[in-house]
Length: 269
Image 1 (cartoon, one colour):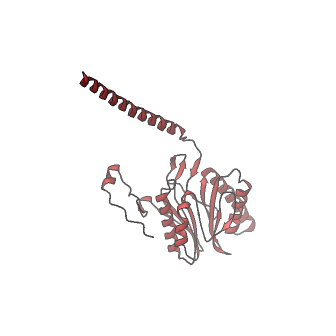
Image 2 (cartoon, rainbow, N blue to C red):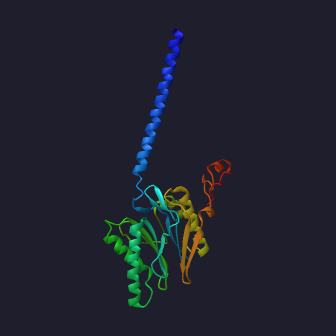
């Protein structure tokens, strides 16, 4: 009799434990379902981004990743965030994709009119000031940060940063977007005056790949634009060809392949 009661008590304990675990699982599944419902696929497109502009001895190099997100989803993994304004001036876009695109379109139109009236290309400073004017006058409605870079015959290669709010800052190098948080110390150590074109481009590619490794909102491929007195050169670096950094795993076809993948090399700056 005592044995039966003991067994019945143990069975009740086991059943209550199972029920408790089941209730936790159901609660977790409900929370996951609610989270999925809150992930609106029609949310505004945002470029959680890494954008960079660097001056070198003779011109500038602009660089950016290619991930565009919609809420928690990646809307475009190969977008082009470096937009042409004139033959000699380009802009890197971050923040709201719609806001940055409409600002770029307006400035491109105004600069075209400016070039027709003067009979010569607009300078980098003129392009940056137009973006500053639009950003500042509409600062309560726009959510975009931009980096303007280019070359002109009067001042050579120039980089201007226009963050949220419409401030205009001329800098030897500028970084922006969500990935820039991981790059300030790196640029303090790695940037130097009088770099060659190849050194500047390698610095930009390395910096964007570092941000991609750490920032979940940056990813995809790396695009660069080199602007100097000879013209404009665009370059493309696929994501699977970028350097791997500390604790970063190589691309795999299957999750099972990760078990057999070698440990990545430690970061080497």
